[in-house]
Amino acid sequence: MVRVFVFLLLSVLLLGCSPAPEQPEKGFNATDVAWLQLADALHTRALPLLGLVRGRSGSRALADLAARLVRKHENERARLRALLARTRVTGENPHAQHDMPGMPTAGDLRTLTGLRDDAFDRRFVALFRAYLDQLVLVAKGEQSSGGAPEARELAAAMERDHTADLAELERAGGPGR
Image 1 (cartoon, rainbow, N blue to C red):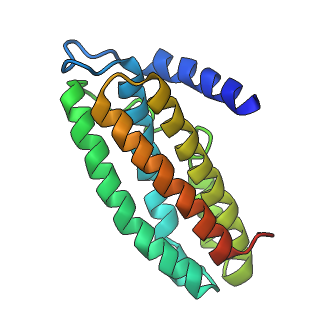
Image 2 (cartoon, rainbow, N blue to C red):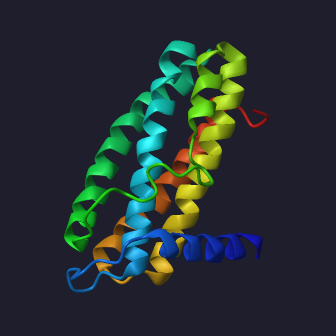
Image 3 (cartoon, one colour):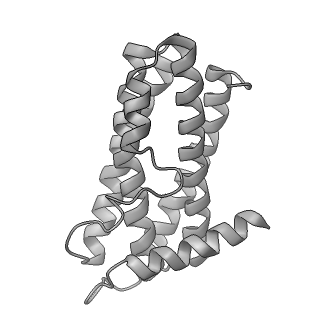
């Protein structure tokens, strides 16, 4: 119930700060635009976080996971941006500079750069878990309220993939981290 409330609150916030397309391609609605922009911003913020793992983690499993996720996120970001271009929304992504739930902040990155080994791993796992949880949550919202079948299909794939990533993160980072 709390997750539903959080999603509804997030949807209202997203729709309130997303510019409406002048003439979107048929089938795209405001939820599609908001989700594509937010998912793109989340991915953009996660990439520097993933980039810190190889040099600071004490876990080979986390380092390998992060390397794989960098490639995956770059591919997903390209797909998100391609769909966003089809919505005909122009201008900067209104979520790019927001510190929203699940988004690693500049402060998080500064903190992580000072950590190594187990301390780094614990903090990274907590931040990345929050990020993946948020991606899954907003992907569910897109599936239930989005208008464009292509966007809903991408959201479904991302929900599946990132749910699996959460399980892999738990295995690589340990349940108590």
